Image (tube, rainbow, N blue to C red):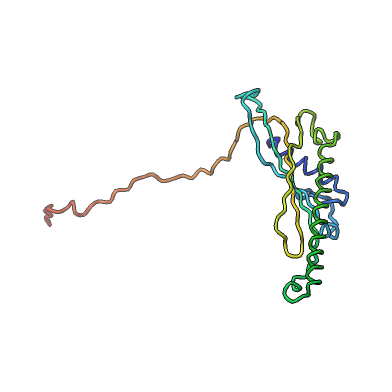
Length: 210
């Protein structure tokens, strides 16, 4: 298995081990899972392999290849808006104002929550104890959070959902072991060509009865 896949699993494991009830890591294999805790979570972290470059300089055409890897760490936080949409159809101005204020408060809560999650995730992955991401020394170098982007997707029903992403860049090497593939089942085929005598070729032939 190539290193970029092993590293993705290692990063996911680091986030999973550091949760402490502050968020849930998607893809982290837990020994046991508290259903109430999972269902009550409103913050999530997920790691994706985003891209990889193989620079020719410093690499070998026939041996180990340098791999410049980018992972996208996606963050999600939500807050309940508790907004009563019915007031906009028949409610008083005071009721409409209260509903809008409640929605804005939920937006602020979700925004603060995603900011806190960004803070937590950055501190976890850039902690010096995670310099090698739990892998053998030399497997990973140049680990760096290169950018953070925060987005505001549309509201989802009664929830305000905020998302953000981080780009984690690093360098590793990849061994080219070759692909052994699979051996297909050998199917024997009968290639014998059978000729059938054409009756038309007998036309003009005199048959004498003895």
